[in-house]
Amino acid sequence: MALHTGMRKGEILGLRWDHVSWERKTLLLSDTKNGESRCLPIDSILLRELSEHRSRVKNDELVFPSYDRSGNVVPLNDVNGSFEKVLEDAGIKDFRFHDLRHTFASHYMMSGGQLYTLSKILGHKDLKMTQRYAKLSSQFIEGERDRMDTIWTPVQNTDSATSKETPTKHLQ
Image (cartoon, helix red, strand yellow):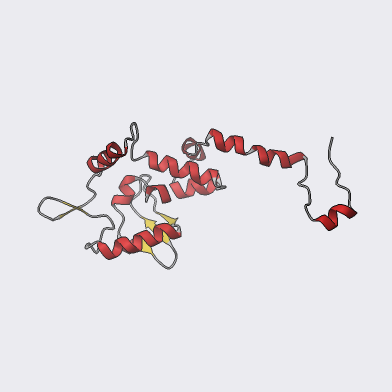
């Protein structure tokens, strides 16, 4: 959920099934950090995963219910113990659940997303906060060289019929 939406841990743990809109492919987040509800778009992969998860979960209220040792639902139970175990098993060090939110933001931007839209998705009121989340990898920045090459030199037409008739002009 965090990698596909940028949702905070508390938003994920508090998500209710009646806030999932299967038709609109959105999630309604009503209990957010800044106190304002927001509607999040969800991609087709997450929609499919939620649908499969829905068929397995026995709780009609919470999307990710937690249970105590007696089998009773414990609302908003923390996932730190299990998350840390998964990280340890995978050999990942110095990583927090919240880093998944940052990872989503960075990949959203590197795939062509807009900063203002990302700010709305993450629920930030200030673009400066969103900029702190959206880190660009050095490989991405180096890959932008191709885009920079097209700023001053037009892309050549590869159509052989056109190229024979019209000579290509280049800036020098």
